[in-house]
Length: 160
Image (tube, rainbow, N blue to C red):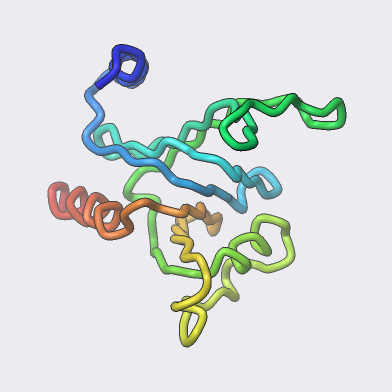
């Protein structure tokens, strides 16, 4: 690992007071919390103890590998961080990205969402919808869904 990456991970472990037990990147993230929020770039998802954390980073737009200057109309970057305890998770399901976008934009209430099915499973991008006990949802485009679900399950068995 690069020194910069190691320093970043060490900083997280220092802030959280424990080692990172599991980590991945999400290529898209959304939530129904905070009146809806969407991140169309990578978000770092990791677990420390029984808590899952998300952090994003300022994104540099590129074209053919070259940085693209920000427009004056672009909103200034605001760092986003979110967390949830494993006990807050009351369900997960795969949905389409379009459905996830509707949730984030406030056009669709999460309680009415059905799992992705039929031809959509072949052609639509899959998003993991994690429903929390307060009724809010977190939406992830995960690199490896099975590992994420295993992390949720592993913790539940360890503390039952």
